[in-house]
Image 1 (cartoon, rainbow, N blue to C red):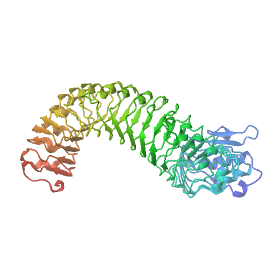
Image 2: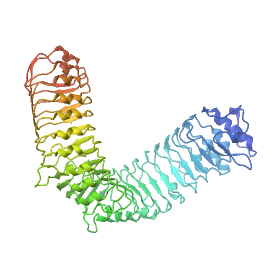
Image 3: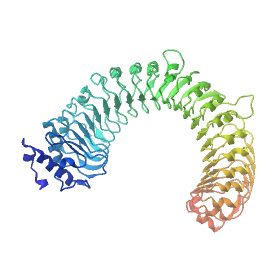
Image 4: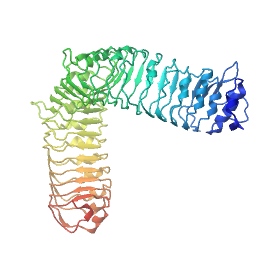
Length: 601
């Protein structure tokens, strides 16, 4: 009976509350587990249904966050007093009914929220006839095709959001004529065509503009200054070219600017220093160039004087020059500073420590020189410090790397990377006082000298220890056995000698062990066979004498390089148990027997 409702009846001018009741019955018939009692004739008291007091007609249908499944009945279009239709965060599928468009008859619909479902097919053009719509949310869903050309017809529209769909084509020009629009969010689609150069001619009330992850191409419009209320601008991965507009700093309300991963070139505009409300700045992975001196015409000190900014990332460009000496003084809320992958030179300024809330500091892959500032120890909230791939050195009057002692004050430090710089110093005993939360310590190819401090065993949370390519000598301290969470240990190309300590076998999570190019000797400890999570083991170019019988129990291992040692004896048939093994190199030893064909290199 419900499905026999004819279009003639639906379009009748004599609609009343019974029309709404029939429409709700049709709606329920296509939704699984909608908690409406069919015996309850008072449909206005049903969950998610609101009615007007005067006419007892449905004015709002809010079924959001109810874990419903099914399709949307076309008869929802007969709820002609409806102002709000909210189906957000369910599992509705199928098309959006064309009949929704007949709500234009009384022009009451204000809010249409279909977000976080699996609705698909094209967006019906009839929606554009709902002229009093104020909020339209259609993503994430599975809509494809183009945005209807008449979508600018709802002239009171405040929010248009269709992110995370499969929309193609261009943005209809009518959208850019909606003078009331405050939010335009079309990110994560396949929309093409350039951003109109006069986008803000009519959109002067726009506050949020999200167009990311669309192949738009073209330039950033010079007219953005007309969007004087713009607070968030997100244009990442849009294939944008050209330069950043010189006057972009005119957007005095801007709090968030993300131009990540485009093809922008030229210098960073001086005017960005005027963005006093900025909280996040991301210009990473472009082709920007130029210096950061304090002179006008280039990026001045003021860009680092944003008192509200929480994130600055300029990584992956071609920026050069020195970082301003006073960089940290006005960055009281900064939590992340990323200058990775540029050509910055000079010293790391001591003033960075004045950005006291800093949690992530990434200065890797630059040309910074001189000693690492001890003032970094003042960053009490620091979790990530990445200084790799620079030209940093030790203080010439000191033997040890005493900046590591200063970093023991950073009690939340989890990742410390200082490798690939000519530091030319020894690890101090105070290294054992680094944060108990430290998970990664990387100092490969850093011209480290001296022995590995016994106190290294205090770093009980350590997952990765990378000290390859240095000039360290002595023996492995037995305290290494305290690193029971260790998963990766790399100590290649050093001068470590003596036996491999049995205590190392207490690191039962160890999956990668690289010790080649040292002076280790004696038998490989038999307990190594108990490290069942081992995947990669390289101990080439040492003086090991024998392989323990239970080594062949490492059934997960896929790469073994034991070449250039003093190994002798006969390879047992148990070697066939290494079912995951892809590469095995036992060359330049005194072993006999045969190697499985599948792992001969």
